[in-house]
Image: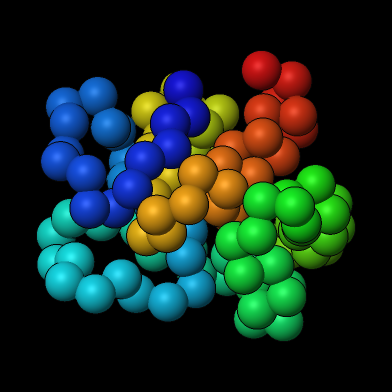
Length: 114
């Protein structure tokens, strides 16, 4: 199962492996709140700056981000964790519901046909 939540939200028993998928480490978050930091699956700096969490750019952002992900070998790490049957929680820092973790979940579910 793939979940998505803010890194600042409380830990829950069913979080499973907590994976930070932001390029930058969030302020005030301790290392023990995250199991794995996969900053390399985050959008490129160029794409992140272009998007800037503007809802009107959401669909175009996802298209461009999915293109980046399709060429990113680090995605295989996530797929292996999910295929093992582990619960995986993708963590993000943004206050916006339109963020890369939500897009990444959609991308992974398409690949896994969940």
